Structure formats: structure tokens, C-alpha cells
Length: 425
Image (cartoon, rainbow, N blue to C red; front, side, top):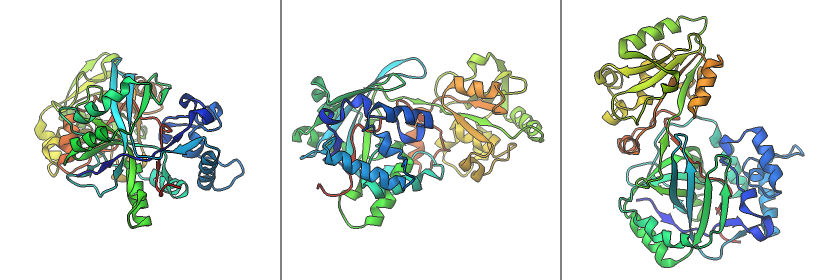
């Protein structure tokens, strides 16, 4: 079972550091150089300075982050709680599909375990690269600066019901991000509420939605230190699978490297053999509804710029191509696309996919369309969201989805609180 505990969090003191609005930032892996500069200019204590560090003097940027965090603590801009608490977060947002929703969750520290049944499961394969960066930052700062986003099953929403009364009061802080998501945060130290939350988990396992690299970094770090202690835990934001505000959006696939090769002809032959093809309006490239039924996707190339709906002719085609995989995986749009097309006529290897050789991603329809129509990529496959139940089924079967199969929105901001990995000073 996953071990979920309150934490003696490190967090900003608004009286010293200023309002949380000027201090928080998006997750490090979605921040470009221009946005980093804008965030850093908001306040001297903006979290981007330590979570995505730079040392103007040319020194070690990880040691610079550690020194900066220590200086913030020394001046009282960042303080540590005297007692453990859970932190409720309510996120009011408008999704990429235009719906206005509210997602409820809470921050806790979770014991780091190996992936496996009954404890913690991943849901998709990760790209190599970011783990070493995060590990070096963790070693230097001895803290989790950015939370992992994970899901748990709670059909009666018992855990949230124990925390919800506290959200009637004044929040600890509020942040509205660039996407318009309004985040509100409450600290809850009531022992009865904490006990009720922990009881609600029982033998429930956790499914990592976002932050696989950070979790794998936490495992490596915990084993490096060895023994028991705060380093055996990692900061998570936990949301119930049954929460009405939990939504999953697609990540569209973009391909290049087709010009001047025989791949376009091979691709056309595969699409005709495996899919029913219907010409549609460009605005209808993303199929309606969610996946887990008939395999469907949109397709457009940069040469003709005509939009098509691809519908798998027979599930047996996917079953044959993915015969060694469990049944829920064989009904996954991204898995079928990878097996039949990316690794088929487009000849992308696992290494190509891992290192984005000939492959790109776009999280919005508008971005994907522009990248194809402009010729930045040769073609695009436009996907629909995946039902949460299908994500659960695939994880329970012990396999991981292809990279970037899911896009959980909104993101959880960085800087709302931190998890110290050493005993309280």
C-alpha cells in the first residue's frame, strides 16, 4: 500500500517574500528561456531561481540553487512548519475544450517505493535526459521543489470530504497562472482530518499522472542516502480518480524526415491497408469523444494540407500487431499508432522515439495544425483524450503507455510548498 503522510513543509512567508502570485511558477519542464526571465523578474524569491537555476557568475548552478534556498531560509522568506500538515488545493480552470471545471486535491509526502502492484505505478514510458538534472538539484538542495501529480481511487471521495470543510476559510495563498487557472491553497493540521484521509487510502495504490522523472529521481536519491529518514519520502499532489474536475487531454504526434524518401508511399499503403479513410474539415481533425472504443485519429500532411479521419478497419489488426501486450493496451490510440505507423512505414526505432528523432509533440490542436501547415513537420496525427478508466486498466496490467500518451490539465504549480529531505533544522 502507498504510505501517505502529512509533512512539515517548507513554504514561503508572504510577510517577507510577498504574495504567492509573484513567487510560484509552472513546472520546470514547460518553461522556456523567455518565460524564465519573466518569472525571475517578478520577485527576488520566485521559485524559478532555484527550480530552474542559473548562476550568472558561471559557477555550479545546482550549488547556486542550494545557496539561494539557504539564504531565503536565513532571511525568513522561506520557513518550515513546526507540525505536520496536509495542504488542500482547489484549481478552477477552463480546459482546452472550453469547459469550466474545478479539480480538488491535496499535498502530502509519500514514501518512495519501487513500482509495483498495491503501491505506486507509472502509466507511461519516460524520455531519458531530465533525470540526471533533477538528481543533481535534489542532492544540492536536499528538498523536493516541485510536486509529483498522482491519482488514487476513492469512489466515495472520503479523503476530500475530510479536507473540504477547511476550504471554507481564507486560503493560505492564491495563484492565477498564465492559462487562467486559479489555484487556492489551505494548510490543514487537524489530526482528525489527517487520520480520516489516511484511513481513506487503506490499500489503495497510486498512479503517477505527471512527474515520472521526478519520482524516479526520488528513488535514486533515497537509495543513495540509505537508511530511514525524510529522504525516503517525496512531495506529491494527490487527486481522486473520481474527482469531477479530473480531465485528460491528448498529445498530438508530429513526424518529419519524410521528404526525399520512400516513406510517404509506404505510409500511404499502410494507412489504406489498415484504416478506413474519410476526408473531413480541418477543424474536425481531432475525433470526438474519448478513446477506448474504435481506434480513430485525424491525419494531415504539409504537402496537400487535406484533413482525413482514420478509423481502424478491424480491431484484429491492432491485436495482431500488439499480440504480446494486454488487451487494454491494444485499444490505445497512441499504442496502435506507434506499432502500425511510427515503427512501421516511418521506421522509427525505440531510440528515435525516446530522443525525438523524426517525432514531435503538440498539446493543442491549434499548435499541431500550425506546425503541419507551416511545413515545420511533414505530417501530423491528431488524437483524442484517453479515459481515466483505460489508464487504470493499462497500469493494472503492468505495462506503460507510449511517451506523452496523456496530457493532464491543469498543471500543478511549483513553489506552493517544498518537502525537506533532511530532519528539521
